[in-house]
Length: 242
Image (cartoon, rainbow, N blue to C red; front, side, top):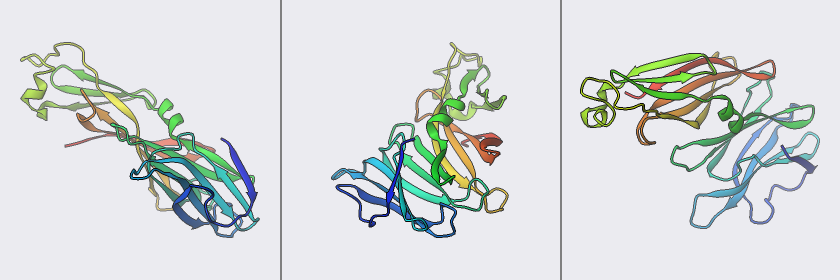
């Protein structure tokens, strides 16, 4: 992560960059509210944004921190401040829509420790860790396997309709040939205070589809909690669309 800081400037973005979102909160832990800004370059007549940059103006020590996420282009970039680590200090969550067919997102969570910005959640690393296999089974069943959690979910898909099922199954309910679906990368990351203790957990969704993206069955959902410097899986379920 390439992070830099400089003496505190004014709040006017430099060059063609525009302010995309702005929040106020103590993210440095010094008891003084800081100004947290997302900047980027907006293309004329398009919602697509490039060069997305996180800027933190620390009013306590009069410094400015800047960092660009790995994926710094997309749609509707937003900021959220909240405590995810339990230290009673606001952390910084950035969410960016990719705009791809799978409606995937780029998500980054930053915290301050030792006077510098640290990346503690990266959607790319999350996607590498959480992979699933999706298999059609005989008798109109779909199985989603989660090796990372050592769990398997099996659901009845007979309600998909005769025209759809006839593409895949023989009249006796057996598969015409092996067929697999797929799970998308991260399709949404949401803060949720499950214990109502003021510390947010992360609810991560990944879309599960069958023959094509529009053939969406539901979402693999992981609930993650920060514990001793790492994200711990608290709950996992396959949310099947009715």
